[in-house]
Length: 68
Image 1 (tube, rainbow, N blue to C red):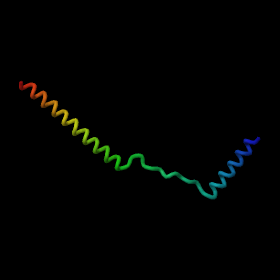
Image 2 (cartoon, one colour):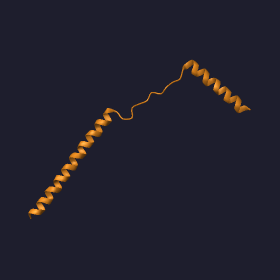
Image 3 (cartoon, one colour):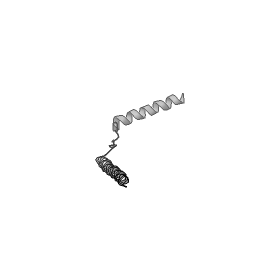
Image 4 (tube, one colour):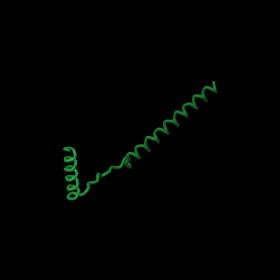
């Protein structure tokens, strides 16, 4: 019996508040900003440059080994 009364009171308070205040919506934030995308692009370019340098070093070592 007491839970029905408390539920009724809760519902009345909620409905009254919605009528007076209106429903508040949360402002959503972007998950990925343009700054984050720029940093990802920069990291990708650096990673690609490191990979290419490592490949060139490996090729140079192979070439030097073949000449000896």
